[in-house]
Image 1 (spheres, one colour):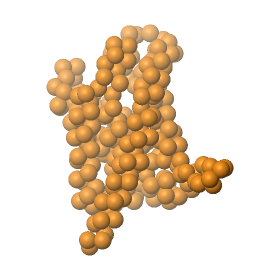
Image 2 (image 1 turned 45 degrees about the vertical axis):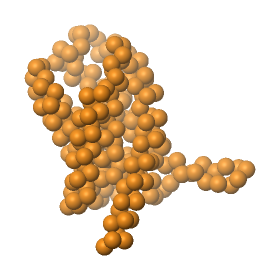
Image 3 (image 1 turned 60 degrees about the horizontal axis):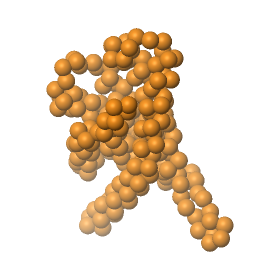
Amino acid sequence: MSFFSMFKKSALELKSVRCLTLTGILIALSMLLEMFSINLQVVKINFAFLAVAMIGMLFGPTVGCMAGLACDVVGFIASNQSQGFFPIYVLVAGLQGLIYGVCLYHKNDEHSLKLVNNKSGKEYDITLYVRAVIARLIDVIFINLLINTKLNMHYGFIPKQAYTEAIIARTAKNVIELAADLPLLFVLLPAALMAYRRISAGGKKAA
């Protein structure tokens, strides 16, 4: 699947009732996870991205981008924040969903990466895990560290200091978050993909 055809195929997913239903459920799940984020003073661990990652994996970058936009808008409305609404953050959330869609959408179906047990000869497909690491690293480095740091400084959410100093200060926070995020991705993404395939297979048999 070429890069641009991936977006077209993902857009066609929107014609599916299953896609719309699951995307809506996962957006609601994202809002729920946002409410139960863990605040450790030094770092706030937020698992809302997991739902967006699942949407991107199952339905691709087009749906993932739209889901990211929706999550941010609905999250703002639900939280009743007093700081005001900043559309640029909505666009960044859409970019986040796009990243997971590009990295994870059906990527374990082709060009698979496998580990082989030398003793038993058994193969283990690690494609999804590698793609999940890449997606999360891009999200953390490009979105959290670079873009959000710049935006937070611009709007006064973090002290007006040198950009490089702010990056260094936020790096430790994101490393801690990454250590919590990756194990969850490794467990939840394969489980979600397996469940979706079983549902799809059941639907085809019923048809």
